[in-house]
Length: 187
Image (spheres, rainbow, N blue to C red):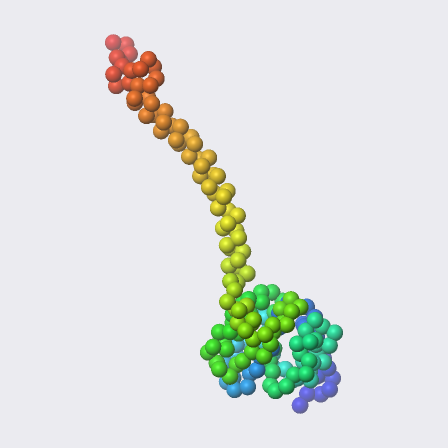
């Protein structure tokens, strides 16, 4: 059993984390196997987040004075929290996938950028494109007009050369005679 000083230090560490996060998802973990829990932790950490099983009183004490205070107040039952400072969509996608595969894992509520989310809103968040996908689409949209301008500018000299060549073949230059019909020089 942990000593009071250890519990206090752990609560302070959690408070420091909760003070800087952008997303917290509260869930229940009762009935999850150790193997599933380990896989869940690794997946969340792979997305730049953290997953912790917390005692209700410690979570409530740690949340005091942080933006997540309302979310972690008056907790009941067994709870776990997942949180991240980076991409809320990536965290929601991972947790939604786990919730589909492991029925014992269920959402309780969420908090993203100062707003408390319901369970359906967490599922909707998971359906959004990730930050990287959105940035990729934006870069494509920004790059496409520039690429079209470059293609059009590169086509101008080529088109001029083709038109000039066709005009020479049709005899539009040098007095109307095509090069094949013109007498050879020097003879």
